[in-house]
Structures are given as structure tokens and as C-alpha cells.
Image (tube, rainbow, N blue to C red; front, side, top):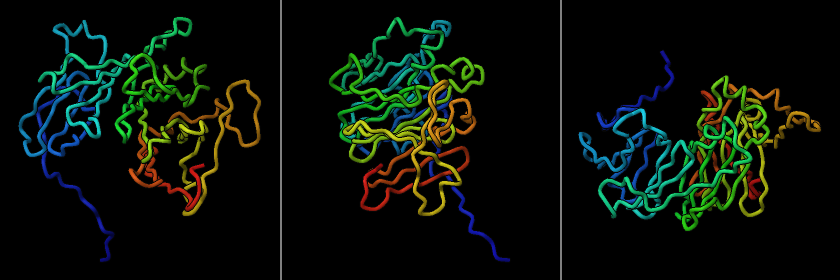
Length: 295
């Protein structure tokens, strides 16, 4: 009988027994010999050829677990310097560590943290400031982070505040109560750089994803859906209208957004304008129109 070709994945190596909690990040080092894996409380360094042991390079587990105030949310190696890596925390901080300084990198080299605005503090402040993803730019000069409502670009030479802040879906600020009740406020959105570090991309709800051009300061909201994914179909920019705001034709009301459709995972080709968007159980691959700008 004619059969469809089935592709099966078989593991070549299994690196086991190094984590007590769920692994949230893996990052291959620029030396192509080692990689790290991170969970809520520890980061381990592995050699790619040695599967049965790893070195613990960060451990934030307190002696008494009742004293635990933050967890590790993401970690990544620097793209060019094999001794540098960064990890983010649920308190909204980024720590840059240098493995040349000590075997256990409990003391960071740099701490990136935005001072909190006391006037904007609310019950949800700590939850929405938790960093869900951190990515080095290809140049290695900048860091891109994502929290619940914003994406931020940090300069490695400036720890006191982000260089740029982009509002991903500020219209949800008034909806935080219901997003807390349905657990959406704990969703972890990833972020990505384009090949030249000039555009950043991150996901949102209703199968929307956002792009921000760092040079022109233009931004666009696009939708990954079955309707828009016909071959050669051009994506139309979408616009969400905040509650009580003026609605234009084709605007989507914030009250009609589907919070079960969310784009948490995105990736950008390192050299070309090709992006991959994961929306629930669908993978969409979009290509830039030939000889055209991103927008």
C-alpha cells in the first residue's frame, strides 16, 4: 500500500540527571564544545561529548526554600565571547556573568535593572516585570528582553536602564485582573532579533505577532492564521483598539481578542528575512516580499 513518508526523531545523545526542575533554556557556546542548561534555580555547563556529568555554574537555591524570592527564567551565552553569559530572573533583573572570574558564577559581573516607578506600582507589578526571554544581539553589544507587556533593548555598557522600550500590547493593562484569573498573565513570550539587529519580533494574543524597527521606530502587528497563510498571500497589518477608544474599519476590539490563541515562540533566520511563528499546533513560515522593505 502507498504510505506517507513518516519522519522519526531518534536521540543521538541523552544528557541526564542534572536538573531537579523543568529546564527553561539551553544555549550552545560559541566555542562549539560546551553548552548550558538552566532550570528555575540552577545553570549547568556541559561538554557536548560528555553526557553523564556537568558543572554547576549558577546556583541560587537558598538553604531554606522559604527564603526563595526569585527564580531563573532564561539564560544565554554571548555570541562571540565564550566566557560570558546572561541570565534573567522573575524579578525583572538581568545578570551578566564571566566564567573567567570564578568556577561558580554566583557573583555577577553586571546587573541590569530598571528602577521601578512607585506611582505605577500595583498588585500585578512583580508578575508583569518578570523577564520571560533574553537574547543577545548578533553583534553581542545589546540584549533583548521580553516581559509581559513590553520588549526592551539593553546596552551592555549601560546597566541603569534599558536603551529602548517597546509596548507590545499596552491595551491589556486594563485587563490584568481577568488575565490573572485565567492564568494568561503567566504566559512566557519569546523574542527574536533579525539578522542585522535592526528589527525585533515578539508574539502576542489572538495569533498576532509584533515587529519593531529600531531605526525608523515604526511597528507593525501581523496575524498568523490559516486564512492569511495561503501561498504568496501578503500579510495585512492589524490594529487593536483599546477599550473605549475610537474604532476604525478592520480594527479589532480588545474585548474580542482570543487569549487561547497565543504566539509564544518565534524565530528569525540569521541572514535572510524569513521568520518562523509557532501558533498552538501550527508552524508558519513567512518570507519577506522580494525586493521590498519589511513593512
